[in-house]
Image (cartoon, rainbow, N blue to C red):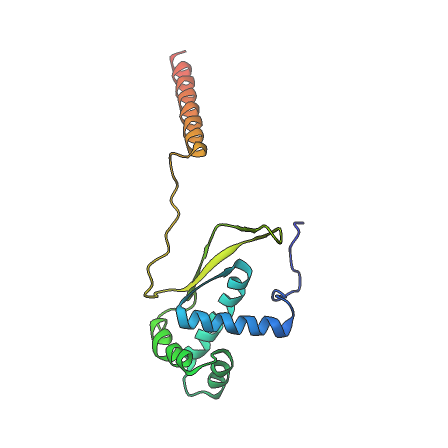
Length: 168
């Protein structure tokens, strides 16, 4: 069994319950305000769950007491609350989920701590920001050149083998 399975753990610890909730509130507010944040992958993945739930709750009703309580808890200032109800809820009215997208960034290596961090960008779909670049395969890298040469050699060997079998 691979290491890292969290059997029975519903969420990541992120430094304890109080610190975790404070951190998630900050990240949710930043995502509502800016519509794109850059953080570690674990924080982005946890924030994604909470922003999905918050948008689902906000889509239910704006006058419901439960909705007001949840939005009041997660959205700290009034500008985030109005943006949630006036911009995000109408944008995602037709969606049934998957309101965000996580894009992985290159791994950062912090020399002082000697720690590797998986970084990610978490963004709301349909935001007015320019799209994130999609990584394209470069056919001229050494690895891709060697793979292409190996494929060509394999195809040539296969073709010569089939020709020799059919002629005999």
